Amino acid sequence: MYLHSKQSLYERLSDRKFRDAFVSSRIAQTIATQARVLRQRNEMSQNGLARALGTSQNAIYRLENPRYGRPTISTLKKLASFFDVGLIVRFAPLSEIVDWVIGLSERSLNVPDFTHDTGFVARKAPQSTTDINVPIEGSIIYQQNIAQGGSRALTLVHDAASSSRRSVVDQASGTQWASPALQPPERVMMAEGS
Amino acid sequence: MACPAPGGGRPLDRFVAELGPEAENDFSAVLEHLQVLERKYWNRPQFDILHGKKYKDMGEIRFDGDDKTYRVFGYFGPKRLQFTLLLGCEKKRSLKDQMDDSAKRKKFAEGNERLLYVFTFKTIPVREAL
Image (cartoon, rainbow over all chains, first blue to last red):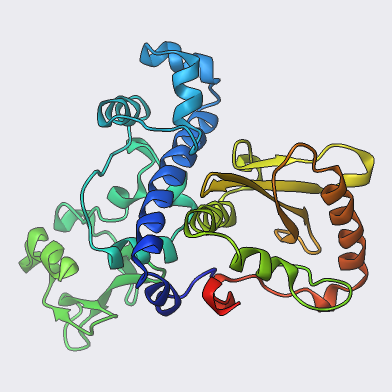
């Protein structure tokens, strides 16, 4: 269920005042919501977080309130470090912000910390051929979840002519590599990223 | 979801269409966030539950803009994971009348589920067109 379409937002954004308000509200609301959700997920009170960051409860209240919040980058960096998440502060084309708004997910606001960041886990490629321990034909030996849904899988295939010869097939692109034994892991990773 | 007026028309769409750019964007940003967050994160300052028997399962979405403060009342339902917008207004001293009107509209919505529609900003007419 989408509140906007890219086209409808594009039309509204042709108005300069609307553009400015669009950017401003997304900054204020997103920072406030993310800060509050991070604190609540960690079952902390505003007071507790204030103590941990060496600031006042009022400062945390203001940070979580889009109406008052004018947090400094330094405060946001402290907060990001405390909750072990990243922080992006940069200028961007409006279209990128529109894409972010339209693709908003729970994860965009309830930001996982480093230890729960599945973005790294899912991308972990086999370290060596000995890691590939799936002797059955058609088995998925490596699966990568792709943003925006769906997944990509590498499947192990036995050569019909020789039981000792195997190859790896990327089902999405149809690309096939020779035996993984001849394929350095980095090559597999590069192919994955392509 | 959103509820039409018992007599027809879409007062919530009209309310949104009359908002200035700051308020409309603030409302939009709050809705975008609430839409993807679990209910346990629906808290102040962007959202609050209405208290009182009359306002069972009802809540208010809070936002600002253009030097005004606004409230949009709604209720959790009719289906699981749905929230139906009932009525929007500018926040002045007391909102008792608007809360009561919302409670009435909730009853109407519960008896006329088929009239509810999916709320989207895509179909909101721009202010100048009103």
